[in-house]
Image (cartoon, rainbow, N blue to C red; front, side, top):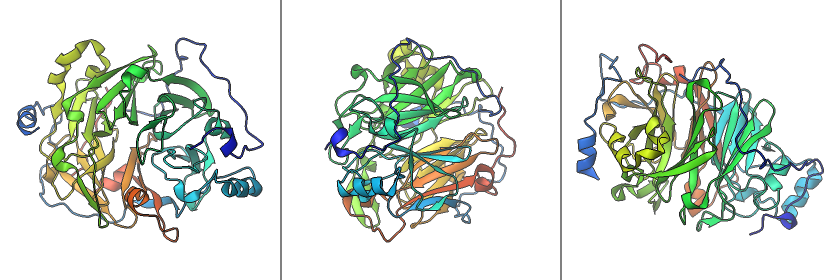
Length: 461
């Protein structure tokens, strides 16, 4: 597999960027204040924690999971991914020399900001010309994805630009934090072509803010840093932390933007459950032992604490830990006492969960992989099946719901990407069908009339 010059069609309008490795610390930026960012015995024992931080506001609980009307609308969709080249001739040449093989391109991560949707395209196979792209909201069917921030970043020489992006997060300072795994050919093995890195772009200018390479000692062999969530403390853009999940070696890498350094944490709750490692989707059966996957940051509670809610992919459990614990590298082994098991396991019929995100009023949204569904839970209630709800279920439009994000607009929306990953890996995609979709719904509309709906709202202290 080649990702250097000879395999790419070089667009005429690319501009090389200068590598920003001179400064020791990242630049300071003012916050945008217009957006408010308000195995079994041990699990059982730790599950009995103080729930007073989440007062129960629901008076008539129901134990029935109901399927809501189709409140999630399709924003964009593709049968096969198309890339916007400078000209039709460039595109044709790329296809001819196999620099662009449409059926080998798979969208994996999604996020939205203002009128744009960002999509990641990891380089799992040959013929993936860009790894980070953007489309407009509501472009409908089959829009050509534009390289972000430009062609140069996506076709740069080895390890000089973006290598293989898995997922992204957006902070309140209007910055796009890109988790570049550096891993290619991941459908067969972990081929670490380049070191994993965090690359940060200013979404107002689409210019590089900072890039940070994860030290080799924090990336054990066969690691796969596949997810990222970002916390900005007290709206201070200089005081930001990124939490990176390692799905294969079961750990979290914490990066401090202010200190420009990172450290790695491990915990048994990041591990998969061997009893939850069997998957069956569309009559395709397989086994995965994927660990830490879904991560979501809460708004501050009444004590000012923010929590990281997380779960392994091969698990039916949800866990949490205060983020101040993750930010305190010196705690060492004593940090274990602060990790909590949330309530009881999800109903086994809901099975595995992939991506998750929490709204600023404390509603956790999560994809339900085996059910082709999206669920919700309000953090004011105990994490139990009767306090969770299936918001939408559709075997067609939500076939393998992979990533999920909640944007930071004043009226927040949920964004879900489904990509039929099981067929991409173990079968084949039918180019005559819609294979990839990005669905969206407003947070308010999605949970209206469900057990997840708030009576009051969480206020940012």
